[in-house]
Image 1 (cartoon, rainbow, N blue to C red):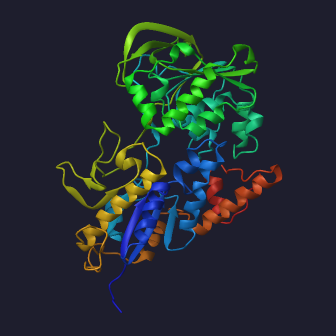
Image 2 (cartoon, one colour; image 1 turned 135 degrees about the horizontal axis):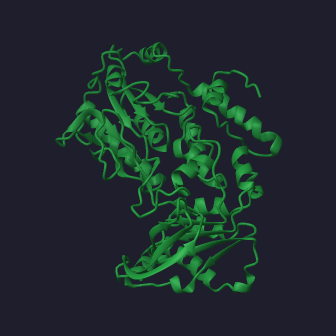
Image 3 (cartoon, helix red, strand yellow; image 1 turned 60 degrees about the vertical axis):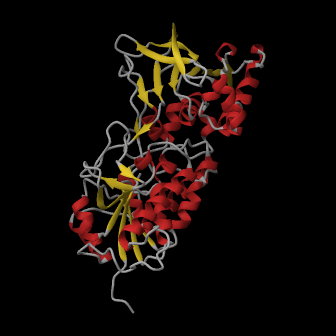
Length: 470
């Protein structure tokens, strides 16, 4: 029996990207020991803290991720913050390779005048609030009657729907009590979603869009003058069934008799309106948009025709953006870790030995679960190639399966001792199972699957088996 220890690999970030990478790596021919680090006391990343509470089908992804981590061959070390509790030099002491899968959690910037006025918010922050993220405040200023949401993707739809929906219709979901109370008191009557391009360029998923039309006591209003289709639009419709479904749903809404709009709240979808300026004296009072026109290829240009919309709050949902990590190269323009197919690159464009990236921090915040899995496969393939010398990264039958051991402290217990000495109260899978069970018991009296614990301190206490005191 070989005395060579297993290859030690750390994965930083326990969202879908990190868990898929761990799963794929565990199924290679390598003798490998994997630790999955997570900054929060709970795993699953944006699936837990970035999906609207009224979309339980999407959250079923957690079931698959749960199955991976519950096998026991991948160790979870949650409540460990890379850059605070440990750094790259520390990881190199205990691991032969490190994969960063920290995702993109910041809002992308929108460079228009007035975007920083009080009452202007990033969608990512709002999503974190209504999903009970432990690192955001428990309150949110919901004081506007008219609201603007900037963006033409599913995040924009989620934000608009949550703002427009009556709080009581969210009660069967995982919505935290503080979020319910705030939404219940919201005076909102109209939510306006603005897209700078046309209906055929919208990035809504067909299902999310159709569901918008079934929100109780909320009318969806579209404007026929916004429905322009150029050659590029028609090509998009004919080449993509998803685009065809989105356009059909939107077009059907244009045929609705305005007299049927009797709901107490309205959700307006505006196309061919580019945000130009947020207006207000010390706070948001209006949004100015510029009418755009399609150029024939699906792109748009401004027409010089401007409109002002009275709103008291603006939410920008124009994309997520990655955050830099200590000691790791970062592309400030793209918001990603510079890499070549998952191999992290230094300032000279050379591979930073033993360091890899996957998920949104690798390629930017685009794509769905299928893309995340293929991303992870690519990164793992190169890691295997690098540590074994296997030519294609996948077939390691003739490779050196005992190569790549560079960490001087490769005993799995060593990293736990290090964290304990640092006073880092890490949470392992058994601790998450306690927290998971506790949240489910909180939901049972209300007929809900769970009610999230939203305090970091309480999450850690439950994970340690300690009782909470009201």
